[in-house]
Image (tube, rainbow, N blue to C red; front, side, top):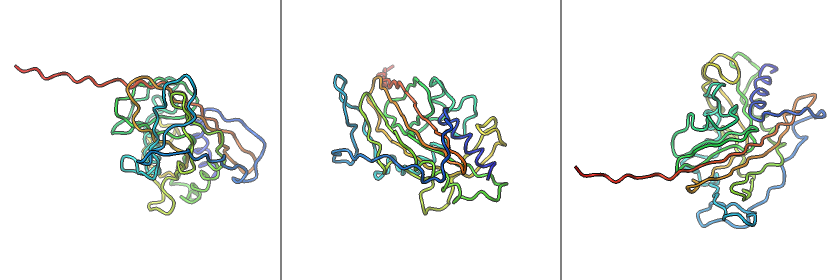
Amino acid sequence: MKSTRRLLVRTIAILALVLVVLAPATSASAGRLPPIVVPPNTTPTGSEPATTHRPGLAPPTAIVLPPNTNPYGATYSEWGERWWQWVLREPEDQNPLTDPTGASCAIGQSGPVWFLSGGIATRNCTVPEGKALFFPIATETYVLFPWDPNDTPQLARDITKGDIDTAFDMSVDVDGASVPVLESYRAQSPALGSLPETFTVDLPSNNLFGIAPGPYQAVADGFYVMLAPLPVGAHAVRIRASFYVIYPDHRDLAVVDAQYTLTVPSVVYLPMLSR
C-alpha cells in the first residue's frame, strides 16, 4: 500500500508540478465537485460551443465533442486510457508531462486526435491541420504493482475517485472563450462495470517512476475535453484545475496551469506537373 501510494504521488507530482501541504483531511469526502454549469444551447449535432466570449476578441473557435457522441469512435473513458498510455510510454527526458516549452508536443502523436498534457508550463506547439485535441483538466492514475498483494483494481479506483472528487477551480479557455467544464466530461478508465477492470501502460526504460520497464496495469479518473479541429492560425489554450491528494493524516494540493500557444499551419497542395 505504501509503495503504491509513493508511485501514485510521483505521478501526481509530475502531472501537477506543484504540491502544497495543507491541513489534515479525514477522508476522500472532504472535498466536493464545483457547481456544474450547463451551456445555454447546443448545436444540432450535439456539439457544445465555447461560451462567455470576451469583448474585443475574434469569435470563439472551440467546439467541444461531448463523450455521448463517442468522438472518433471512442468514449472519453477510452480516450483517457489512450492519453495515459501516450504519456507513460515516453521516457522522462522527453516526456510531455515534464516538457516546459512544448518541444515534446509531437512525440508519439498519431491518428486524427492529438494530445495535450497538463502540469504547470507555457508551451508552444505546432498541430497539423484537421487534428482534434484531447486533454485532461484534472486527472490521476494509479499504477498497480504486481508484487504488491494489497493492490487491487477496486483500491486503485477508490483512491483516484476520492482525489478527483475534490477537483475545483477547473477551467478551459480557448482563444479568449471559456469552455464549460461539465460533469459529463468526467470519466473513469476503465468505465465502471466494464471488463477488464484495468488498462495496460507500457513503461519504457528511464520511465517517470524509475522502475523496471514493461507492461503494468493501471486505473485512472479525471475530467477531460475533446476539441474539434481548430482552424488554421494561432490559438491560445489554457487549462487550469486544482484537486486534493488525500492521505489518512494529511492532504496535498495538486495544481494544474498549462498554457499553450498552438499554431495550425495550412496544408499546401502542390499541383501535379505533367511530363
